[in-house]
Length: 236
Image 1: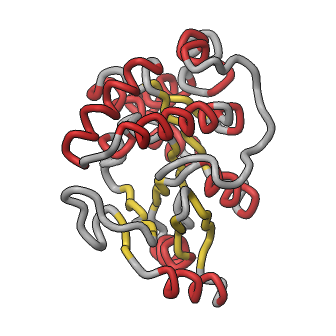
Image 2: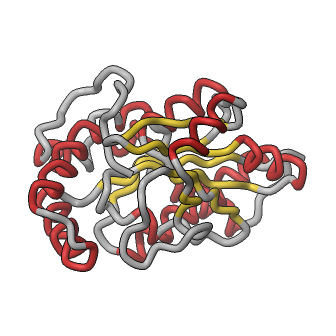
Image 3: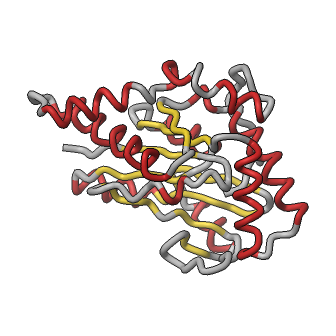
């Protein structure tokens, strides 16, 4: 049986990288032409390659999705999905709204999850703390905040919404979404635990999150659905 493809997106600093360690879920490592930051290692956070190598992969149509973001390329290789399908494994893609749009167009059955920070103020605080270790200049923080607003405008295009205010409950909700989708597609009688996962996951569906996230959207001056994303909108 083919596995489930999950997509997770969030503005830089929202903390999604701390959420994706879900049991029996393969994490896809993207390719990028940007240099490593801080303690990042090749093959762990990203596959770091040259612009020439990346453009060669584009020419050979080796990407499931790719985008040019703030002057650097990012992309997911098709081989990740092909291998997961062969083995029947579930896989999660940590990609921005551009990549998510491309993947959903090609694979509409993919499950998309958008992670929101609890507020613009909290996101700015997280970015400033991160900037101390990454030596990020102040203008870069502002650029990421501006990019965050534009990315958050695309939340209506996602199936599930998670608010990463406290780590442990946020991880539990992501696990519930993953396990709930597994249970939904299993075609078998569900255990009590699986029913609980489904119940929790359904509370995170976008239509049921609209009222809960209103104050967050207001803090970013985002209150109404928007069109699908344009190019060059966010930072990965």
